[in-house]
Image 1: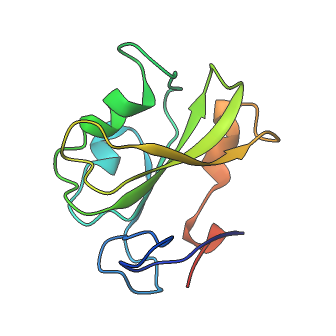
Image 2: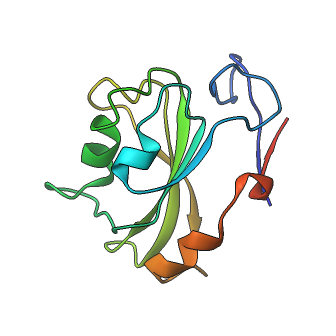
Length: 122
């Protein structure tokens, strides 16, 4: 289980409506993820990289319907495993930061088993 402190204070993640319930978990391709109020997104159809046209930042920038903070789980081929990124304004260019790495999740297909219950917001 992944635990994240939610809110607007220092060392907290501002996600969706900032409560402790994951209401807007999305997993799948870009079209599935790109919905307003998405709080946690898991991209299961393609890996990302650290830079270039397939970068995690370009993927997040493409989610123009997500206007509040969100966590994104991607398989990153440059890292060789999955990672979690946070962006406080996904619909605006730039701003994503790496917050966790899963060095035990080496394959894109392994992301398909993630669900809202894997995340604890406090």
